[in-house]
Length: 263
View 1 (cartoon, one colour):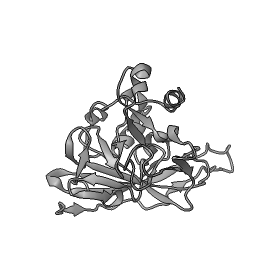
View 2 (cartoon, rainbow, N blue to C red):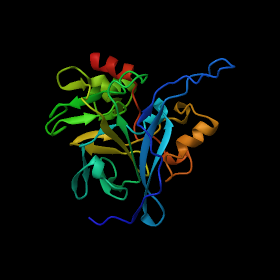
View 3 (cartoon, one colour):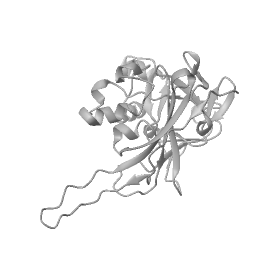
View 4 (cartoon, rainbow, N blue to C red):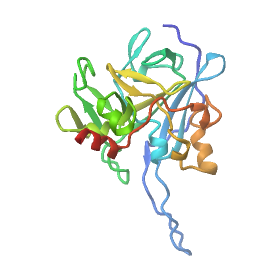
């Protein structure tokens, strides 16, 4: 496979996360705790099909982290040239989608998932292991490791009566049952990824249907001013959040999914 030219601008080097600290001044009261930050890495398809990548330090908060932690290193993504490990995908690679055939990958983001890191949200240091054939023959094959923000594409008869739709996207954490889907704490740091296209897509990871990155409803992005600009800067291939387009399918919350599964 021939890849377009790749340029690598200088990035910011730092630790994966920076925990809360207190800055004290001898003549004044202590400052508020500094927010945790995280190192995010991005590669995107720029002008003239040139691949550009960069590293940026940004807040370690859910809105940012959700854009980078769906697919664990080693996940095999279906492309028009066969399965490729997510860490080896380059922008421009034509990835197979459920609804629109092969689509060029425009953006890939990654970060390090650190088990037992201090002051991080519960679950952010854990992965979900989906055992082979859990959702049907070859879905997945082999076992698939997913990050905390991964969502599965689901088509269940119960969805029609519960949500008025025959298909929806459900968080992987809702399926953890200790048998076919296991919550695991990795022994060491694991690289996790997310992928984005011109439009929201359903792609295949180890044969299982998962969603590409989409920020969701604009009202779900609780960012304003400088923080919103910082978030948008993570996606240089677009100029506004509206360019992500509509969500391909409705999303179910963790509680909604668990209620439906228990019905």
